[in-house]
Length: 467
Image (cartoon, rainbow, N blue to C red):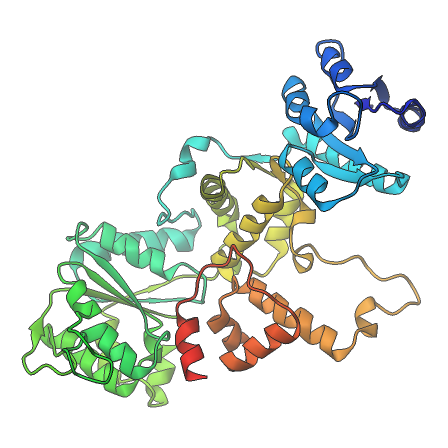
């Protein structure tokens, strides 16, 4: 049995709701104004408050923050006959857990009440972040207690002090740049610059200029001298992400820079020296590319003096609780939210899911859940549908998918791949087997807009220029 407080100036509505909840075994109290509701503090301890918006005197919207403060821990469902967008937005921003329109649909009300009570009763079951003090932690920190991650941490410790070139391998989204930053941070020059280059981001001529720099007049548009990433990374670390995408011409220049510690800018005559430590990363099998003749064998061996392989998330699910805790603390800090708990059912869904987008996908899922979470606990209804599965079809009936048109199936598949890659269009193109212009046309065709939480993708602009 739960205790409810119904706040509504409509006597008939109050009586109807009171009888409805009592027949379900709940204790229901009534207040006919915001002032009466606040006066019940100390006399009533409701788990749930049903609050009307339009009342004489002080409106339910105006009183909602104070009512939530007077009854800490109580959840609030706002009801109103005035169902406009602004009122809905204000209600959710002021602390409402749900919003129901009049005339009240009892099935909708029962579902909202059940959901609110599940939140309320999850106190002992939800996974708690131990302390909000960790919320402002280092974004570059890595977590995990699985055997494979312990080996990764050991190798990072040994590799960092050696100064040797490191090749980091692993699927997209496993955290290869985090490993590179950890090596830099614990290496001999932690105060030096850390410069990252996405080798798949630019066309060959632009990439060569970006890496090695150019002199004024070296090519059309070179109106001034510009230092490249090798020069900028001097006395620090140069991180070459997606190094497998380098052309043979750039590979030859990179090999010389690694062997001789010098490079020549575009349009220059004299070489420049550098002591930048090079760390490379790839999500493909470089040895296979060497056999196919698409990657230089001498450069391959030069890059992988030390090799660190990051396992996919599906192979380190023991780390999920630690990852959820760390990512959730960081997301709360960045989004200024206070979503500190996770329903155990969510963790079961996470454990059963294959995580094609790895840790990046997990972070994306948690970020969306926190943004849309009305209270302090993430529940299954905030997860993507494919993550928690779909209800089994009724006997003797086709599943809904069987009645979908081809365009519906294509739209769902494209959306799932984008979600899995954290809306990284380059990686989505790889998984879908389409070009970047084709993906843009599909997104436009199906009205798939990049969400605001998706990270900016610098290569997008370069690809646009090539399309």
